[in-house]
Length: 501
Image (tube, rainbow, N blue to C red; front, side, top):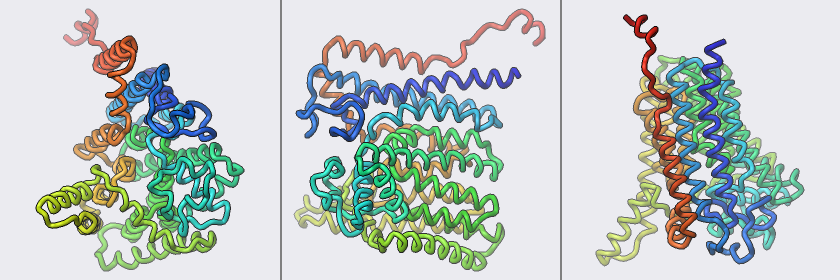
């Protein structure tokens, strides 16, 4: 089959390029004092820092830290290029079987399954909360500090050590099971949580092509934009975030609703909301579309209310069965303690707070934060309501995707991997400007907020000149490789000239 052979050859190059990229990220982040991971003895298999390095950044000679940072950044650039190449292939040749892309997904993910958790300490907080659950301690009543001086609490970010959990009961129940089955071993628990995140990614990797088919769109392109997205792979798999489980259940629920099984879909959305609350949006849209198109708002109210009752019922059953109560609703305010300039509302509030203080009117940053963040949340709600009311004209997937985008951007805290919530739903129907936003923002977001920048600058001053020269040569080689034409231009043969005439 010549077509199959050509397709296989076309996929080999980006598949290998992506594997090399994630392998480079793995090798770079495995440096004992890498700024991209947080490791203590017994928390990972390898790359554990020496005792003098555990308390903070303290580079030691011979650790090859400079090359490690170069490898991570270079690998990320290479991965984005490989992703874009596969996107161009699938969008230019609609109808490629999604199963042909599965080996690419596996090749890219494998190195990320053996690297220590990337770019975030959240998975250690999950493990500590799972340890609390397995010991019968309610994470909605206590912070992880209640565990005392145990391996589970050593790597939890100090900001959350006394904070109650903001995660839903379904996640905490599964979290507790993972720690229990790991026999309370921190390393095995972290591995189990990463595998749980992988399950979430696989769930939406399967659901997104099905959703795309139901809208008459190309499943392979949707799979590439959602499941092979570097933002997804590096953060949801590499970082082992529970957002993967939420989005996986949410996408699966919506896929079932598109197959005329709305109740199953709503229950799955309820499970997703019992991981993180924004997933309730899926139940709202399934209820909105339950009776079919062309319905008035009055006709849609009852099915939406029914859908929300089913979703809430699912959440209540899980919470009561786990005997956790509803303390997690109060825990949703805990992220407000984070003040990040990446969040537009927080950034505006901090600027206003400094201006007010500069005018001699006192320090009112907390009050201004509350007002600005509350206003931003109201704007996000209004955007969501407008998109819901106009979803038939806008498109239901576009409406869901942009509603989630508004929730993230206008929320009290913006973590860059939160953008995957919206991009997974935009992927099946992304065209034109939407497609450019998904690709462009995903690529840029991979680099924002990383802690390697200042390390790179300091290391370039102190690193061995030979290593610097080697790194520069490697970067030039990567740049030349990425910028070269994908297919060399050749002159037409005499036979082709005769045929064309």
